[in-house]
Length: 241
Ligand code: MLT
Image (tube, rainbow, N blue to C red; front, side, top):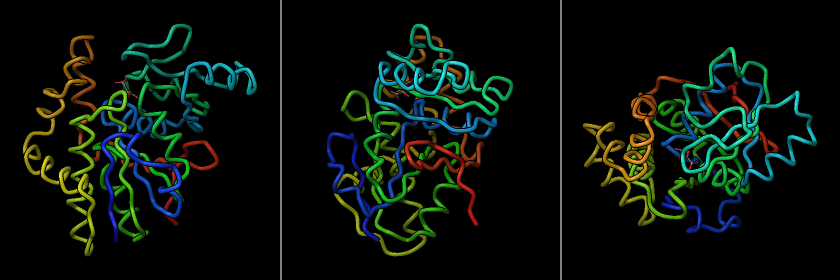
């Protein structure tokens, strides 16, 4: 299996992702928030690339049928219902709702990844569920890190490296340079994932905003065993048949 890892969405063309399975990773915090929303019973999550696009879509679907969700600079967008802290996505709030989801990097990366043959949203919180799926599919894989404004993010690279490291147990993998480097970063940080998040630039920024608990949430390994899959522009929970 060929496995490529891209540290930022700008490193890859949509056309490269066609015919590939894609794992999109935004450890802090979009991936964990999406997993939590699905686990707590939301109907689906529509990722969009901008707040304006979210508002357009909301008008088409109808204000009463959706929750507007997302952040800019880590904070809830003005006029939106929810920000991007996974703790906001409780069952009482999201159950049976369609969430329109606009975050700075994560939702944009997911929109770009939609060119892929199968697109799954991965993170530490749903790690094993995603690993089992991609291992069973046994197709060429691209790991797309959301990064931070098209710059490298340590936490996404470590999580991507962990996926690749564990995939090696299932068979031979052929890695691009990004995948090799991510494996090294995972090895270096695997004994203390929380520390990696706390020392990352975005982790430090979120702590400064008062979101320290979100970092602990986002590095709980396999705490939310859901498989978020992008289908026809909507993220839903995938059920393995
Ligand atoms: C993003 O998409 O850039 C993030 O998930 C930012 C955050 O809310 O921490």
